[in-house]
Amino acid sequence: MAMERMRKLLAAGPGYMDDASLLGLSTSEADPNGRMGHIPGFPIGTTFSSRKECANARVHGKTVAGIHGCKKGAYSIVLSGGYEDDTDEGDFILYTGTGGREDSFGGVSKNSPQTHDQSFKHPDNAALAENARTGRPVRVIRGPNGHSPYAPESGYRYDGLYKVERAYLDKGASGFMICRFELRKLPDQ
DNA sequence: GGGCCCGCAGGG
DNA sequence: CCCTGCGGGCCC
Image 1 (cartoon, helix red, strand yellow):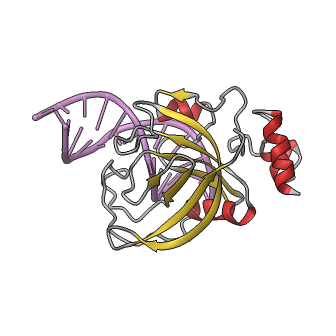
Image 2: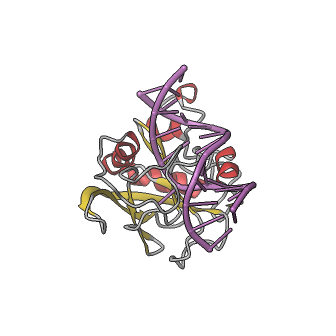
């Protein structure tokens, strides 16, 4: 059973849950940019001083975006408090999808409000929703967020693997629709 | 401290 | 190659 296999892999420690083992691909077919599971050499609690450093370590490959994934599913997400509808209870997280915000020149600025609806048509939202379907966990990285007691004071900390329990559309605080994800931390980490 | 804008790396 | 995004620094 999948959960049994997952527990074995987790017990074996970091580095044993990669793209190949989880997706049933040969090693050569696994994407070197996107790895699922723990990243060898960067255990839970590892803190990076910047998003770029975190990206270099392949813990979260994208330097700006909060969801890193592809059609097969998401590898990792970052919680930085950039979305008003996020809730962080430590081992349970309500995460908001990407998009729907006013984008200023060249990107979304830190406190851009929601200005239109989000959608699962967005490839990043679709990727994370895919994890809910397949049961594959995502790495969770917490960035600085004054509102959350679970966030680091500074830097970006790898906080382990979470299962995406549900993915659905909901109405956000702004009144616009958001993609909502319910994440629960895997046990025994 | 806040706003502005430039830039990086991924993915299609 | 082009577009995008939960950075980040610099200038006011």
